[in-house]
Amino acid sequence: MEVSRRPRRFFIETWGCQMNELDSQRMAGQLMQQGILPTREPREADVILLNSCSVREKAEQKVYSRLGEYRRLKRDGRELLIGLCGCVAQQEGERALARVPDLDFVLGPARVGELQDVLARRRAGERVVATGFPAERTYDVDAVSRHGEYKGMVTIIEGCNKNCTFCIVPQTRGPERSRPLAEIVREVRHLLDYGFQEVELLGQTVNHWREPGGDLDFADLLEEVAALPGLERLRFVTSYPRDFTPRMVEQVGKHANICPSLHLPVQSGADSVLRRMGRGYTRREYLDLVAQLRRARPDLALSTDLIVGFPGETEEEFRLTLELVEAVGFSGVYAFKYSPRPGTAAPRLGGAVDAEEASERLQRLFALQEGIQRQINAALVGKSLEVIVTGWGKQPGTQTGRTPCHRVIHFAAGSEPVTLGGVTRVQVEEAFAYSLLGRRIELGGTSGTAETPGTTGQEG
Image (tube, rainbow, N blue to C red; front, side, top):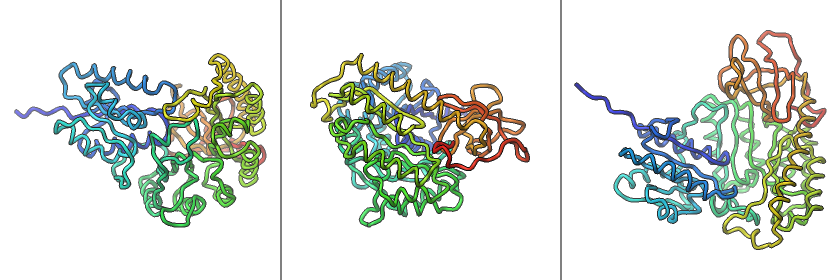
């Protein structure tokens, strides 16, 4: 009698940004090509990958603590491979192998396409460190496990050349490297053929994309990609304010399928802090760009990143940040207390802000932003919005989705729930600071009418 062998399983834990999410999808696809199947339970896994992020405070300590938890799973005698991947992997390299004896390999973000080779080398007895930024990189669009998500993600530019004084990304993701336009278009078409209606273009400085060896820039890329048949929604993240050109602004207003949602990190509202950060633009230039974008796209919703308690930040400089937040009317703010990152210039600037003072400022910023979001979202009550369905809600019989400008909305599934990634219309009935509640308009129904964007600057 033949005894069936238990299929091998893998578990990936992902921290950080959308680029890490896509890297995890790429690694999952390579593992599945080897017949290794995903599991949600680390105890069932034969391969565990921790795809790490080094942007936040104490990132290294958190990674090593989690690796300690995974190491204990090796005690049951199973053949378990554990890999540290992502930005902390690039940052730590050989140190990680020395510090964690049971760690099998270290894989930097620029080497994700080499996972199969790294696994083979480890099974042959080598503890592998694959870091650095090779000129030639493996990127197989067919070896990406998109696992039914509502949007497909496409990296168009890797790395960053900006060298902001607080940021570790140039060290962990390397110098900027743009992918050719033809290769990007081919991958987007692949996603559309796969069934995705929404595509998100990714890059640390996504709008600094340039055609390798050519003259095309991000405006040309948007023109080409937005025109592809079947692409209902096009997003891009993260944009760098200094890199926007009038032609790029024009493209945002020209194509209806470019979502009226833009993440535009400002980091501070004070010119003196922006100079110390090395951002390369002023408060006035940022506000002028916002005005240009909203003239081109009156329904545009803007979100941003802010750092509170940057070295030397005074109460007056922080007050300027609060004033900028009020002036712009952001639909969302991602704000953090400053934390020194290894190898960056900011810790040498001096003038450290007291931790309690920084925490108090952060809470004041959150309180202000929550009120702004409640006001903006309240203006959407009664409007009918197109919603792409992202999953099931926490309440039985409810689904959740995203509006074109990326707001979360919850609604009753109705008699025929919408499939993941499907599009429906929902009338907003109640608004909160961080989400909307609505009623789905069934096909053939008469409730609700579609609103014409452009009156508030913050349509859903």
